[in-house]
Image (cartoon, rainbow, N blue to C red; front, side, top):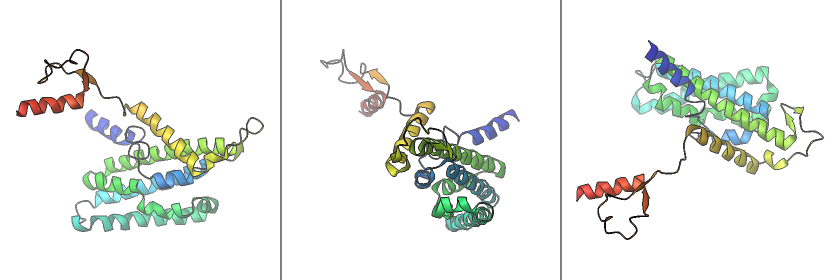
Length: 241
């Protein structure tokens, strides 16, 4: 029971930092860069995507043994498009301003790589509860990433957060943060921070080359070092010979 709980917890939390769909897997970048000029837009898109993720994962997991393998992609599209239509109708009815802000990126959730990726790689191979938690965790990670980018870009580009003035009288807005170059800059910084937190991007470990074939007679053997990957290749080649 404890092992099962830990497994379910892992499926929920992995999408927040370690396998964050935007910062870790680099999916859904188009909508991420396009709508994060304001924090309110980020929350709206994040919640809409999370709803579609959770619902589509649940349905696809339920039907995973029924959907023929040859037509699984069209089936996924039908399921996802149905939930996106529901989201569009709800947003149009209760928040027309948000619909206007998100524009074409709201219906384009249908072809969002994050949703297709989780449907193909997880929901189609796992039971319903883990699939729901996977969608919820990935949606939460996506929403938090959008929110961070939205707050940073709105704060520096407009001097406001959620439309409320924060930097008025302190510094002039840096308009470039509302433009594509500013979006790419903030995105790159967040990717670097995420890689640092998860331990990705470390320098390859250096080991001495002593013990490798031909190194004993090498004039540089005393001060030579090679990466672990290169050493493994050298050792493999030596063993083959």
